[in-house]
Image 1 (cartoon, rainbow, N blue to C red):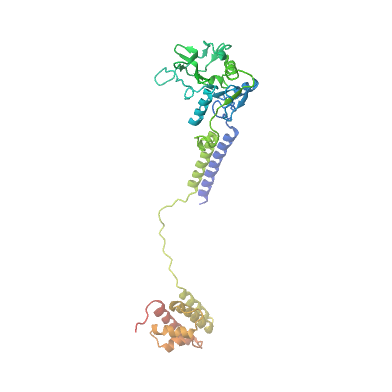
Image 2 (cartoon, helix red, strand yellow):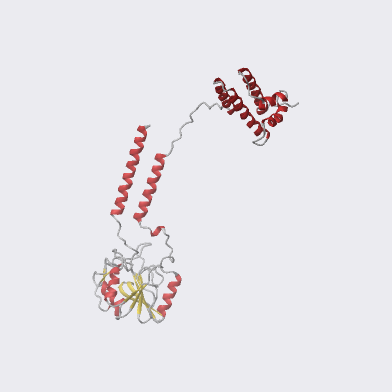
Length: 374
C-alpha cells in the first residue's frame, strides 16, 4: 500500500510540475496586444496606430465614436467594414449630402466597385508599386505608392479610375449625390507596416486631410454589446490554452486518484445478535456474581420495554398491566405471566433460573409471532 501511495505521489508531483512549467511559459511570454486589424490603437503590423498619429500631426480631429462630421468639414474613413446595414445606410445618406467617404475594404458594399477577377475565384492583385494616372487633387503630389499586394478594382460606369492597370484600377472615385466615394483596393498601404513606404503617407494626407481643422470620422466595428462576436472569441489564445491545460490537468488528477473498483470480494455475512441475547448475557454475568435481584430487574425491564412497543403501550405502563395484555398470547397461565414480569425478586439460583425460562418463553411466543390463537 505504501509503495502504491508513493507511485501516486510521484505521478501527481510530475503532473503539477508540467502544469507549473506550462503556466510559467504562458505568463512569462505574453502575446503582444495586437487588437483588430487597422485599429487606430493597434501597434501590430496590420494596425492603424501610425495613421492615427499622422492625422493628428496634420491637425485633423480623429473621431472614432461613429458620429459623422459636417458634410463639407470632414471625411468618413472605413478601412475594415464591420458596420451593419443601418449604419451603412446612414453613411451613404451622409455622403449624398456632400460628404467624402473613403472606403479601403474591397468586400464592403459601400465601395460600389467589385474586385477585379484574376485566377478563378481569386481577386487580381495590384502591382507592388503604382503611380497615379489621374488628375484628382488628392493624387496630384503623389509619385508612387506601395500597394502591399492589395486588390485591383473593376471600374464601374461613370466612375473615375486612378492608379489604373488596363481596365482596372487600385483607386476608383465616383459621385454619390452631392458627395464623393473613393474606393481603394485594400487598406494595407495605410497599415503600420506600409505607411512609411513610398508616398503612402502623402496619399493619406491629401485624401483624408484636404484642409486644416478637418474631422476624420474613423468608422469602426460596433462597440461592446453591438457586435456579433461571442465572449469566448474575445479571450486571447494564450488564456484559452491556459484554461484548457488546467482542465486537462484536473481531469488527469481526478482519474489518477479515482477509486478503481475491482471484482466483488466475497465476505462471510455478519451474524446478527439480537438485543435480547445481549441482555440475557448481561443477566447471566450478574447472576454469576450473586446479584440475583439486579439480574431479575434487568431482564424484566428489557422484556417489558419490548412488549410495550409490541402492543403499542405507553412507555411508563406498569409491568403488571403489560403482563395482563401479553398473557393471552402465551402458553402460560395469566398468573404466572404477571408473576414473571412483576413478581418479587428470586431468593436463590433455582428461582432465578425458573424466572429466566418464563421470560424467555414470553419473549419467544409474543415477539417471534408465534402467539396463541385460542
